[in-house]
Length: 241
Image (cartoon, rainbow, N blue to C red; front, side, top):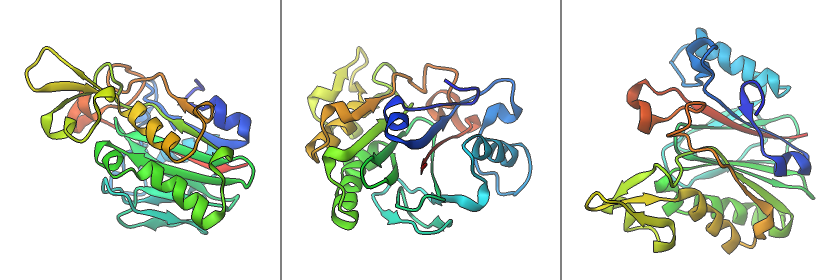
């Protein structure tokens, strides 16, 4: 952990700038990055501080207007893509951002060709296999080999706490579900489900790092499940060094 974010050892060793911001009690708005519709205020200042800690500013940011879908865009300049949950770039001056508060941030990096991707994969995006589709796009559009791609499945709702009903559980295999004492309820290991999707696309298991942090039970992270509408948001970021 840094003073306001966590990083992937695997991505850092591969040469990627990466971070997932944290919920920090002694910072304004607990270091939330939720968009509040204005360009000033504490959350805007939080974003500036977070960007600066990674060596960037707002003029270099790429983000998507997330809709829990599987659309992935290739970015060549700083902008916001509508209805987009995945971002991909070869540019060295762009910071790809994903906003989360229990959903899974997936950061991908081709250490040979220097290609970066950021994916927002909640349960709906995982059902649509957005992380796997990002690997496919890296391969088909930018000639990445899965052997060269490393992945970080970041802080998010963990199997220890993420309880779902049959309406969600029906989409997942039994190996990522654990029945609870409550009728019709199961705990879902969404991180492992995404890891399996990545290995199915050819990533070696050793190329995948799963964060040990659960956003629901760990107060160092924002959680919509825990805090409801009052929850802040974290940003997951990746850039090419």
